[in-house]
Length: 347
Image (cartoon, rainbow, N blue to C red; front, side, top):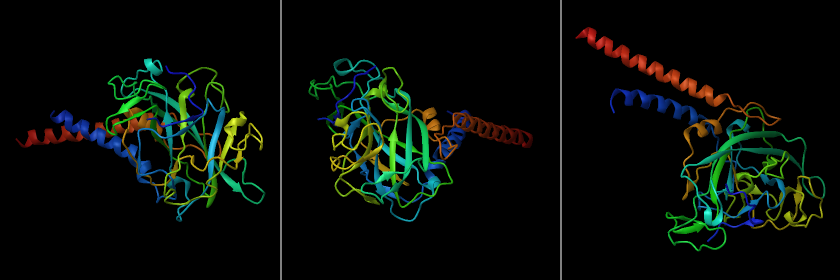
């Protein structure tokens, strides 16, 4: 497993009846999985390009001693219901399934389960600098099956220096990390304010609000940060040169830690080209290096929310969805058998 901390500002880098019954079960399951996405309201904020590359410049949490990273934004449109505004964030994965750099190897489709936390704060803008009002209006912790970055290129397309990148044939480009989008399905009952501060946080070996205490792929997990021309297309980045950060290292801040360390706070400068990428609401994205997510992981990632003001995670919902699917499949099978019996009787 690749456990080495990555660069401080990581760069993107150079069959019959059985088949019919089975199809009915799969169709039912897909309908259940798709339900949260189908409920998404119109886009309220988006600074993610409609097409993203194999990887995007990113902020390394472990290497920069970061626990939380986010931004102050203004929502557009009129939809403010939390249940209709799923939040999509772009991550950047630098972890290999085994080894690292020249020995980096990943089995296609290999993933690990990672908890990520989304926070949405009210913004107090009455003082000299904006402040995230504590406690958050909404906190959602969700487990995602994250893909490891592909194996290092062995075809000669990529320079073997640096992090021994992987090669994207679709783009004819080499990348050090792998861009991957995650979507938080928010609980109902919260009306989001027009202006808010959002953030993402997770734990690494020695950082985060509950450090894991051991090395793992989380040490090579980053949050994508890039300012695209013409973005956001919906909503407003209130202070595009600034961000909100919690780090114990002064070098993680544009103000070199002058505003304090170890607290989630406004950092006034240095972020003009490094906006964290997020979308509230409907957000179709075409990724040139899209990585399929295992079916059971999709169920886990779209589990119904369980709370609003504390981290929530439903571990029973995927099982419930599977049981419902099997029940639906059984009903379909019963219907088929009944039909066959009726046909025999008529014959």
